[in-house]
Amino acid sequence: MASFQGLSLQTIGRLIGGYGKAESFNPPVIDPKLMAQKLKVTFRPLPANYQNSVVSAFREQLKAKLESDGVEIVPWEAATRESQYDIDLPLIQRKRTIYSQAVKADINAMIDVERRPSAMGKLKVCIAENLYQLYTRFWLKDRKLSVSKIAQFISWAEENIHDLEDPTNTQVIVLTDLDTEFISPHLNYEKKIPIGVSTLVRTFSEIVIGVSEKQLSILNMNLSDSVFPAINIDEFVAKSLIPKVYVPIMPLSLSRFAIDNYAPTDSAYAQKLVQLGNALEPTGLLPDGFKIDDVVKRKSHRDIVDWMAKGRTGVSYGFVAYAEPPQYVGDVEISEQAWQSLSPVAGYSSDELRQSDMGRWYLTFVAHGEQRFRQVPDMWLVSSRSGANKTHLSLEQDVVRVGLKGGCLHLQLPTGTDPNTSDVKPSYDLYVMIGLALGASLFAPSLIEQGMPMVHFHGYPLDQWFASDKEYCTGVENPSVPCGTYESGVFNFLGLQRLVEQHGTDILLAGLVEPDHGTNIVAKDLDYLLSRLQTGVSEQSISLGGKNFASLEKMSALA
Image (cartoon, rainbow, N blue to C red; front, top):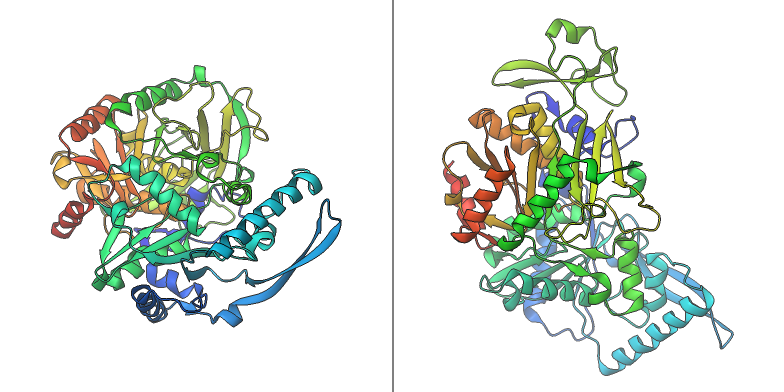
């Protein structure tokens, strides 16, 4: 779907992304075919005497499939350049130059196989790690190195560490044997978390593809356990792999926000959010995540993860949020005649968005065949901070307030919080929350007029869980873009539009599915949402992991 009834992806993406000051941005791409045409990928040469014939065969098949889908495959020699880094070793007073082959910054992904160190390799790793700790402690005095410099420092000893000119742009994808324990539908999701995280840390990659003769799995920090038949490699590459390469998981930088403070104890919605999280604890839908220091034992690895996580000390799975009622100033809707008198807004098409004399923005779109001219409200929501225990939120410390006002993002931290020293950061899924809140306010206003609770969990309901009356589901066929991207926000925004077009505005509950990631559930009423989720878990029609996804696919195919 390139656009929806007059709203272009350019406009939707700029709104959800908070790019309201006409600054440059990359419009969202939601078609995997177009994503593929924008990607450059390189394959690292296989190690000498590599013996895994199943992985080797899949590697060649994957290379051919990516190329046929439009991805540019860059030969290793053209994708890398020699880099060097001079360090002064403390204590022994000697200088050393480290040489490596760095993957160029314009490469989107480097695909490798898992390399298991020999006894000599393990000794080299030990030496490199001790040198790194000495260097950072006595010479740098705990000043931070960039990811590239850390990788250069230790890559001579570690084959699974890769020298990347731009780690924020180049993802590492590792091919390895399928982990049958991890993908088992009978394994408790909480036990999947340490297995999945350990695999990502061991291979030091953003994506791990498990390979067997009959099945393929894909793992990233979302900890999905999606499994594809090996014969369905076309679907695997187009729907799952290419979207993950095109939009990597990245937390939002605080520089994207106008930062202020607020008093959570004075917010009725912050209090409702804590109530929501507490009530969900018995369901098990929001398991504890992990602390980086507990999982990543080596200092060099922790420093890399810390840099890429922008100061976050942990990762959690799922979110709870509560959208406040939209805030309007003046007429909520206007006539076509009034629309014609409005002024253009820099960065937006005047055919889609204009501004009144009062500075209020109005969008035009078609709903059920009728042209509408509706105000873009100021949107505020409260959510759990990134990494917080969602079922034991501290009202005073764990709840942030996020706004979309005048087209720009605002972040309000609990009173007394210093953003430079605290771990109170916005959720990775923030764009999804904004997309849901904005979509509801524009297309299903009754869903959000009293506030709208939102829950995301890393699993799926069975199709039968959705009641036939005023409960709906969409998104099953979407490409599996990860969280932390405004493409994911766009898909959720479009999902609410689609439900309204199909079923009307009277919606009690909506499920927005994110393949390979989980499900967002929004509802008109907090008690109703909690009752439905608790019933679903008790009747075993909602569960974490991917085992219920097939039933949603069947429901989507019949729709």
